[in-house]
Every structure is written in C-alpha cells, then in structure tokens.
Image (cartoon, rainbow, N blue to C red; front, side, top):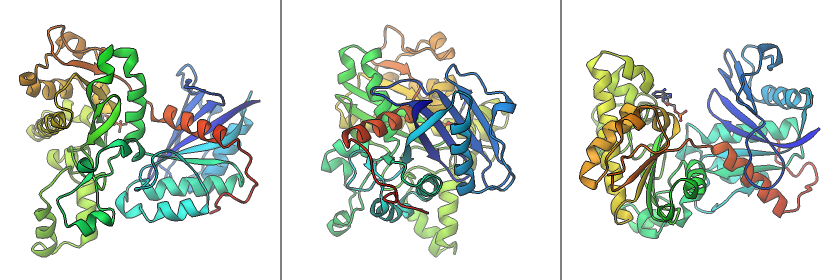
Length: 407
Ligand code: AMP
C-alpha cells in the first residue's frame, strides 16, 4: 500500500482531487480527478500518473443527487480500495480566504474552522464549499490530519501601502484591506521561475493567472509585491463571470435607484458579469473565439484591454518589468488573448514571437523583446500537497482522533 496525501479543491458543484505519494519535495500526482455536477448528476473523471484517462469501469460509481458528505466517504473508500491502492494519511485543502493571520498553511481544528467560516462573506463562491469539504473529510475519516492552504497567504509579503484602500482608517483596522487571491498558483510559478529564467527569475515579474477567475501578481525576488484582486475575489481583471474592478458608485446606484436587493447585485457581479455578461453568450473563451457574434469579440477585447491596463499599473509597483508569465486555462491555451494583451504592451518593449505564441510554446517572446514572455502551466494541487506534507512533517504528526473538527 502506498501512503499518500489527498488534495482537495472544492467548488459549489465540483470537486477536484489529486493524490500525492508521501515524501519531501514536489512530485507528480499519482492520480488526478474531478467530480462535476455534485448535488445533481455527478460526473466522475480521473487520470493516472501518466495522464491517461481511467477506463469507466475503474472509476467511482456515483448516485444522482448525492451530497458532499456521502460523496467524500465514497471517494475515500474508492481510493483505499483501488488495486495497488493508497492509504490516505492526510488531506490538504485549497481554502480561498485565510484572512489577516495566516501567512502559511494551517492544521485544521475546530477553532480554525470557526475562524474561517467568518470569512465566507468575503469569498461567497468558494469559502463555504472549501469548508464543507473539510467537514466532510472529518466526518468520513475522523482523526485524519487535515491542512488548510490559503490563496491569500502568498500575498503576506506585501508592504502596507499595497494593501490599503483609501477609506477611513477605522475600516483598515477592521480588516478592510487588499488580501489578494490565487496565491497557490503564484507560489507554484514562483517556485519554477528559476528553471525558465536566468537571473531575471529574481527580478521584476508579473504573473497573469487567467482562468475563469483571473488575477495578476507583481513579484520581485519571487515574492508578491502587489496583486490585482483585493478584499474579495471580485476586484481587478474582468473574469469569466465576475466584473472585476468597478466604479463603486454603480453598486450604490443599482441598490438605491434601480431597487435591486444586495443579494441580487452580488449574484450579478459574481455570476452574470465578465465575459459572460458582456458577450451575452458564454464565459468560455474557447467558445467566444469560435463565435461570429460581434459581442463575443467585444468581450474578449475588453478582457484583454483591462488585463493590459492592470498589468501596466502593476509594473509601477515593481518599477519596471523583466518578464510576463501567462498561466491558467486562458493564459495557457488562448494564443489570441495573449496576443491581444501583448500587442497593447509594445510600448514597454514587449515583442511576441507569433509562431511560438500560436503553438503555446514555453517562451513566446521574440529575441528582440525587452521583456521575456513565457507560458507556464500552473499546479495549485502540487503546492497544497507539498505544504500539507511539510507542515505535518514539521509537527511530527499523530493527533488523537476526535481532535479534528467534525461535521
Ligand atoms: P481555469 O479556471 O484555469 O480552469 O480556466 C478555465 C477557462 O480556460 C475556460 O473557461 C476557458 O475560458 C479557458 N480555456 C480552456 N481551454 C481553452 C482553449 N483551448 N482555448 C481558449 N480558452 C481555453
């Protein structure tokens, strides 16, 4: 039996999981999978270490409408019963918001769960589901060590000025500051920068994490200096369904003059805006690229205009730019989006190699470019596995069962 850690990234209706053999350092997952359609018609998919899809008869059998708790128990059973199976020794979770106090991963206990639940209003799309997954694991395997890895932690290196809003000081003291997100992705990219850039890895780098959620992080010496997201994951870039930075007066107008309830405004800003809202078609860039509708192209153009503007603003915080890294679903796959962003940055000395960009090569800048432009796939799960195993090794584990919070 292989001893391994289970990594979980739980969303509202989907659960991504990955399994990593125990041991120091970063290694590939032995299994990666996803359960979509939780609560309705669940669909299971998984890939082995070599990236091969598991045949259907080796997958998990799921019942319609199954909720998180029974699903988690089934997933753990399935993992433990696989041929040449694994013994799960720990679970590491992506938790979007760690608030002010968590500059690194934290061992889960009842007090931590209570604390993290108070942050749910700041990340309503993610935090409640991240915590539900922790509770479901605790219910299925009481006593299993669990570790929360926060998307906010990577940004704890930022100076106070980068975190402040121009609001009354009392609100700053109450914690209304920029936290920033996508930190697990930035942590992974920061870790591999030396493999792809020479001494520039330690220089001025902007990482563009462009997925359905999108943000950018300006780094110096591979540490976060500034980021485009803020108090919540709504701020900054235009996203798949989220609006990004908005004139706050619009929110007041919608509530006061249009008569929208705050909940309806929240839903619109998180779920009905961004690429989906502007195109009126989809949040999926691949679909929008294939569409002949002018609104589809307008949505992509606006996405790229906003991204280039944010990138230029972030370059101020690191006094220039040595490299741009594109990552996540859109950043890794859309040559059009990368080109439309980089074409707006030629005045900064950015010159793309069109052919290399077209095939999503690692280096997509031309030798003439003053700024290196790279495409690097991110791997948030690898960071969670590494952090989970490192924290538990440090604590020289063995927590009595029952100490882990239960559902
Ligand atoms: P993520 O949130 O990182 O999984 O990214 C998901 C998004 O990546 C999707 O909604 C698509 O917009 C985009 N995407 C994935 N594959 C492609 C592709 N081949 N071409 C363009 N966009 C893609």
